[in-house]
Length: 286
Ligand code: SF4
Image: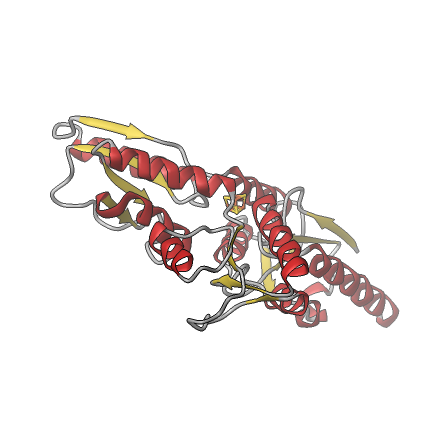
């Protein structure tokens, strides 16, 4: 049985960077407390807890430094933390920071800022915060705002698909070109996700079964699973190597492995070792 790994997968550099920043801060201060979950991966969360990076509610009189995750936060959250006097450890991914700056700049110039993305996602909530009352989030598939603004800037959640973003911009043009006086389009997409999806698609076309490693709450892990299934390949999402069923691998010559952006290399390595073990057991049994 051959085990093939996707050319691009696992932790993106933005999440790796945020974790490094937080771990160093925890080493220095003893403990830091993060604003929201750092990654959607229970194993990583556990490792970080052991290192002193805490998650959860922060009591009002807490003096521990506050860590901002790669998704970033809006100015209101920053102001609230600053008001408590706690030190801020900023792990915001630079690509998200760029998006926040564009949102603020466009709003200051009087544009209504359309943010294409999930309004409930922490990154989008933060970006919207930087545009103040000039921001309108639009989820993929939702109707366009009515009335539609005349001076409009369009940006995207960093992890949206480029194809969907292009379709969204086309829809805006087709429906509202006659009433728009000025349109600014800023490409705030991050290419990590699209590269990982392309790599998963390529691999899925080559293998008999795909295993997608990542937390069940991770949206980008679920997207990788969908991409593999769209290729017509049987695919399973797993959080740990213990979830692999031998039956999935019976009769397979090639097994593909990919992982979501919040999955550490150690989880992927454990999955590969488990596949090798199952392959050996199946060979003995046959
Ligand atoms: S996916 Fe891209 S934007 Fe998001 S944290 Fe990773 S590098 Fe940054």
